[in-house]
Amino acid sequence: MQIEVKVPQLSESVPEATLVSWYKQEGEAVAEGENLIDIETDKVVLELPAIKAGVLARILKQNGEKVTSNEVIALLDTEASPVEKSTIESDHAVNEQAFVMPAAKKIAAENQIDTSAISGSGRGGRVTKEDVLIAVQEKTAAPVGAVLQPPAGGRKEQRVTMTRIRQRIAERLLQSQRNAAILTTFNEVNMLPVVELRNRYKDDFEKKHGVKLGFMSFFIKAALLALHKFPVVNASVDGTDIVYHGYYDIGVAIGSERGLVVPVIRDADKLSLADIERLIIDFGARARDGRITLEELTGGTFSISNGGVFGSMLSTPIINPPQSAILGIHATKDRPVAENGQVVIRPMNYLALSYDHRIIDGRDAVLFLATIKEALEFPGRVLLDL
Image (cartoon, rainbow, N blue to C red; front, top):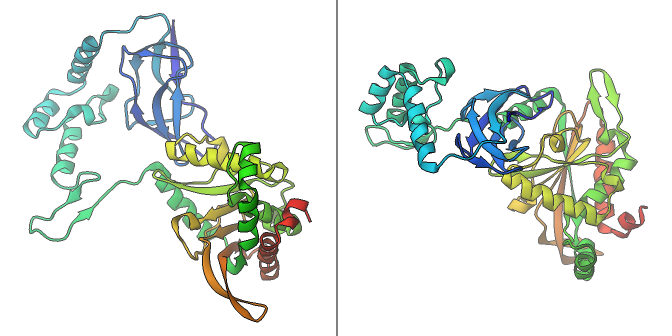
């Protein structure tokens, strides 16, 4: 029996996606749950696992093609037997020849162009003369991702097409700066109490919970304490309305080779330090592999960006719309500070809060950040919910 392989349901804010790479050829066996293809949206790269075991009978959409929710991209035969590899390669060559128009084939041969790498624009995906001419031009003039060397031997340049994720990041950053009155306030925090607390209990914590005790969970707990105290920072703007959220969904910005993603920790105020640490580790691993789901990237009432993992000393984070604020944390470094009239060395961290001045007054922003500072310098308040 043949079943349809469909693009998963995309969110309302994602109208289309791009097929990145098929992992199977027509005629190859597929195990249930095995990834068939990567699908890139402007938010995340999705895997499309086979819902049944069988044979990939027919591929209807090729790499690089645009697709929409629930669009059929292949047929899977649950009763057929896999074809021998040599036969697959032979059929693939035949299909390739059939889908390359004669004029296109001639030009491709003259210019040593691999037509299997060209996404055809003709009927049924056929590679046309125009498709090959474009490929020739790109090869000789500006191939995507290639280093360009001017004929005169001048300076090198590189031109690379943005991925959908990178395009979306650029769009949202511009949207944030256009639509919000962004202001940033700063403070510094002495991390010694958190460092000492972590060093004292990290072994017992890992033994009991099976996860390492990091610093991010302390920052999140401190932020939650401040959000409870200043609910407007957890709110968002909708036209002329201020929407106060009665829940705390915290977005944690994670950088990866695919781009920046902000998975959301739902109802973070109901989670323990161990729960938060597990989620952060899981998000980080799946962000690197591109396996975070669209649902996990949707929503969020407040975000935290940790530039400190890359060594950043200070930055002004950009708000993730439609949220109204974002906390930037940075590298903790030993610095000389004045304490009780004496100069001492303490592990210091600079905090930055970017906020939408349309609904958050400077007073509330400064006091919000001061609340986080106090919670981290007296971590017992976080643990005792004071």
